[in-house]
Length: 205
Length: 155
Image 1 (spheres, rainbow over the protein chains, first blue to last red):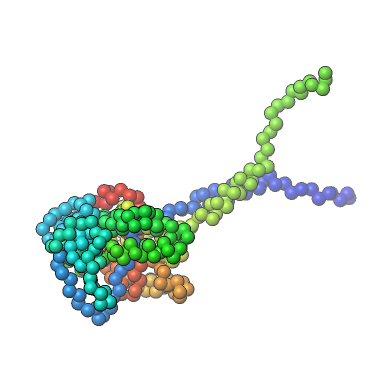
Image 2 (image 1 turned 30 degrees about the vertical axis):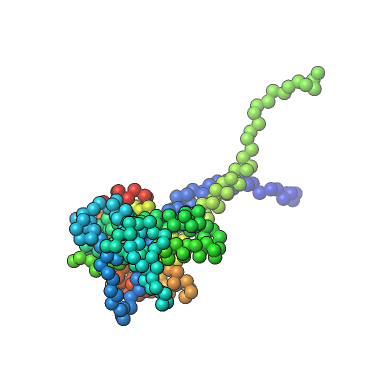
């Protein structure tokens, strides 16, 4: 019997096999990225000292179960108004910052607010309190959180453009891309200038 | 002149030899980018709220997900909480987080994020209960999952 020469393997069906696998992965694939509003919850500790915060340093936002919003106890507003109200409140700069390490407080030199003495003293003192009802819908809650976040982001962005000639978003992206220390310092400075202080008291039952 | 006589010839067949290469390239792309769906949702499809100020969740392996929504069974009312493949009670959330932590390296635990995927019709009370449970066990990084940017559709 004549020995056959080693004939080449027929690769014609390779494409079919690959197509089969391809279609399988096409069907099973999901490419959704999980994105959302990120929050850091406050730590829980037993011996939290009672902090006295002046009434004027707190922006009171209350949402009831009918998704109606009340700001400072007397003003019913729409969701879209919250950003402006929050910005005016945070950026007011009517007084001095808290004294740190024995140094006396300083006035807010980067604030562009109305400097109203009856509103917040300093961004580092301004607290936004968001009280919701147990029956408020989650969509509303997210919308308000989004507005508050937007207020902080816009203020940080303004300061970033003024100081570094670069938007806050770009700085964050830069840091993610190369992670340089300098960028981190800039971001930290912006965050410190306009720190997010959001308090969420117990919901209305 | 026979040298220049044109031969009547049909179009040559297109070579399909590189077809497997192209297909394999696509195949590898999808293999790399694919994530298998791990959980079967026992709830009604979630209608995510929208937001503009969002952050992408990096490091998918460090994210534990909690779903909140209505049960598929229309007779059961109220918000239900699902983790992995089970509907659980709010009080069981700590044990879920602990079991998630046990799967990760110790130094990674502090970077773990809890992603709350809740329906926009859910009650804030449920969400706040979950947050309270997470605070109790020091799982402080939370992300409220959203889709789209049309904030008006939220309410």
